[in-house]
Every structure is written in structure tokens, then in C-alpha cells.
Image 1 (tube, rainbow, N blue to C red):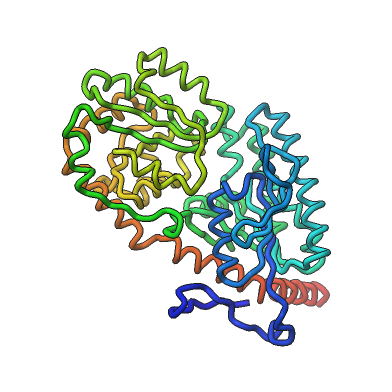
Image 2 (cartoon, helix red, strand yellow):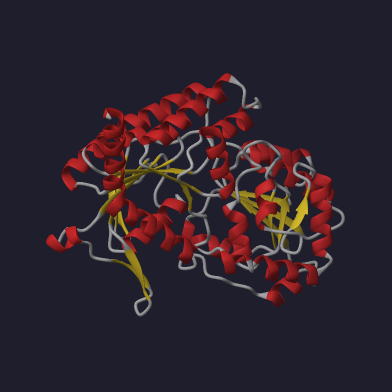
Amino acid sequence: MRVRWNLFNQKLIPSVDPQSARNPSRKKRVCIVRHSYYPLDVRVRRQATALTRAGIDVDVVCLRRPGEPPTEIVDGVSIYRLPLTHQRTSRFRYMVQYAASLVLCGLVVSRQHVRRHYDLVQVSTMPDCLVFAGAVPKALGAFLLLDNLDPMPELYAAKYGVTLDALGARLLSIQEGASIRFADGVMTVLDEVRELLIKRHGYRQIDVILNCPDHTVLPRRLNLSQISEANDSASRPFVLLSHGSLVDRLGYDTIIDAVALLRSRIPNLVLRIVGPGEGRDALEARARDKGVADRVQICPGVVLDRIPDMIDSADIGVVANKNDPFADLPLPTKLLEFAWMGKPVVSSRTTTISHYFDDSQVAFFEPGNAADLASRIDELYHDPRRRVSLAVNAGRFFDRYNWPDEARRYVELVGDMMAKGRRLNSKIKSENFLKAQS
């Protein structure tokens, strides 16, 4: 199936192919499998929404948080939740969680495929091996797409303080390669991740769909007067914001240390950390030890619809990824959200971030260096013009990269796979078989 952009209706619509013409009531169907929660998972939510707007039926198989119903329809997406939750714990427990998720996802997806006959099953990592949950639909003719969101060997090395030569990292690399080869198609989030996967496994057919803020969910608010007047009154809190999972590699401890260094220089400074995770107690203890417990607010994660107000209440966005094999790779979603909402950003200088943004767009500091971070915050606090300049220049990123364009590319990719992929794969296999026989 192909799709086209309807300028009059401003939405993606599917083009009719011969098979659909013979059976006009038969809509294309896609199942997305994710070891995460929906609709909290931002990337999957954007993808599912893009597909439904293109006239494609979408099911999502995911985990289930306490209080959530096992089945539900949200914005036209049918959700099937497993009786599983995700917990950051020991290596053994991770293996148990992922194994249980693989088995249950495989059972649910296979049952639903028999009932609904999916044209494509998309599996979004982690873990990579979750792609094997789509084995039955693939055997029965569905196209199997792997969305590799995070390179697991690098994440393992960063989380447990080992090198990529460690046994665990090498085993994860093996299962990563096996998962890529099992899938009919592969996509990822960044050119840097694509190049890493190509270098490691030699598999070159990898598409990139960048994570960008969805303008329909996250409205753009560039209030330059608010930025320039943010520190005119010492009675008004000057708010730093950093949000995301409360894990060590994202450097929240570095931000707390920087706030402690700025305690006397910026009397109205407040740090707001927002996100889920088991690291909250440790961060609160660190704030108390540094004497800034009254300056640090650690809040639970918020639903997607509340993110605009959360960002709007901040003066500076902070991205403090540490310098490790994994944290160096991502282009953090929160950085893009800050830039889209017109907030100046202070960020650690990682390889990927400095590839997409320069010093005119982001105030960079050395990863893990609290003193350097404190200096950048102090400079911006006392230089409103610099804050305005950063906000305006960072917004130019979206002249080249934006979710409407990425959504079109994603739906076209899925549509082309459903229309051609299985037939092309069968043709290639037949040709290889004939060559082998001759």
C-alpha cells in the first residue's frame, strides 16, 4: 500500500492498490509490540496516531500498569495490555521480565493475527529479541518490522560499568544481530545508531525515523519577552527543568551539584526534576547532603498532555547526559521539546547532540562537570539576550527536522513494506534458490 499527502484535508490517506480494489472493505492492519506502556510511550503513540490518520487499523500490544484495563481503545488505537510491569532491577530479573514479555507478546500477537490478519507487525525494542514474538504472523505472510530504539550492548556497558568486550555485552550484540536478520525490515531513530548497527552487523537496509515533537500534542510557544524578563525580579523563581526516567546516566546528580554551587549566586534558583524511576530517593538524599533540598523539586512523571504546561513553567531546560557509550548516542527527546517550546537549553556536549546543534543553539558544558554546568547557568541567568538568541536559533532545527515530515516518511515506509516487502523478499529468495540450483 502506498500513501499520499492530501493537501486539502491536510492528512495522510492511503492510495488504493489492486488488492484493495478487489476488496474495498479490507483495511490494512498493523500491530505494534512494545515492552512499555501505552499511551505513555511517546514514539509509539506518534507512530500509531500517524497510521490511524492514514486510514490503517492499529493494535498495540504492551505492558499494563496498575489500574489500567487489559483492553482499551484510545484515539482509535486498540490496546491489548499484558499482565506485566517493567522494573529496573538486577540482571537476572531483567532476563525474567524480557523472557515473560517475549512469550506473552508472542501468544497475544499470534492469537490476534489469526483473528485479524495483520499486514505488518512492528516490534519496538528493547529487548531486541522481542521481534521473535512476530514469528507466527511472519510465517503466515505478515511483514515484520523491527524498530531498534536503543543499542542494548552500549546500554548494558553503561548501566553496569563494563566495556563492550564484556560477556554480557557480547551476548547482547549476538541477539541484536539475530533479531535484525530475522526481521523483514529495520528502522531506527538516528543516523548515528544506524551507522553503529551497520558497522556491527553489516546490515545496510536500515531506515531512520527521527523522534521529533508532535505539533498536535506539543504546541509551539516562543515567548521571547518572558525569556528576557525572567530574572528581573528576585522574588520570582528562576526554574531549571530536566525530565525523563530517573536513571544515573541522565546526570541528574550533576545538575543538583551545580545548583549547590549556584546557591549564593542565584538566590531564586529552583531545580525541577520530573520523571518516573527508582532513583528518586537517591536524588533527594543528594539534595539534602548538598544543602539544597529547599531548591530541588523531584516530581513523578506526568502524562503527555501535561508536558506543554510543565515546560512552559521553566526558564531553562537542562540536558545532562553523562559521557558513557550509551548516553553519548541519543538525541534526547526533552532537548527537542525544549527547543520546540522556545526554551533556552544547557546541555552536555555529546557526539550526537553536537552533530545536530551548535554553540549558537545550545549552551554546552562538559559531561559530568558540575562546575562547568553551573558556569553556563550563571551566564545565561545574567544574559537575557543570550537566552533569547539560543531559543530562536535552536528552533531552526525544525526547519529541517519535524514530526509531520517524519510521520509521512514513516507511513510511506510502512505502506511500501506492506505493498511490496513480502513479495520482494519472496522474489529475492526464489531467485537465490534458482541460482543455487544452477
